[in-house]
Length: 108
Image (cartoon, rainbow, N blue to C red; front, side):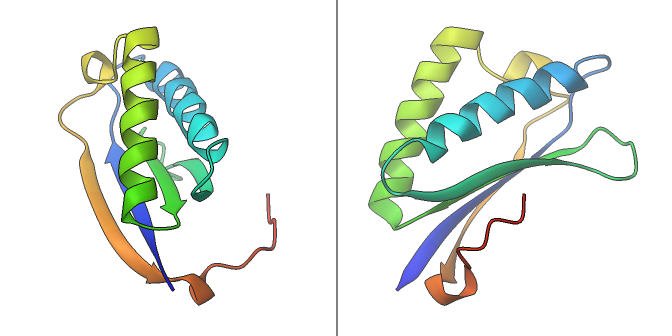
């Protein structure tokens, strides 16, 4: 079985790093609450650049499409969207990974 993983890398405008992190945490928590999302998390660059990574793993393409669209639409209405606090467009990638590469161990 192949999972779909969505990876988003973005940089906040000056003095917006905490807000961006909170907004991404909220969005990933909403994804995790949906059936079809295996896991989701947010990370911050260790070099103090402010770069933030948001990842989510989905059971398949249909789950990725359905969950991402629903969460982004609802969140944009709630918080006005991410674009105003980003330095530029985020880098977004969607990849397939073997489900056997994802363990069920909770490390966090």
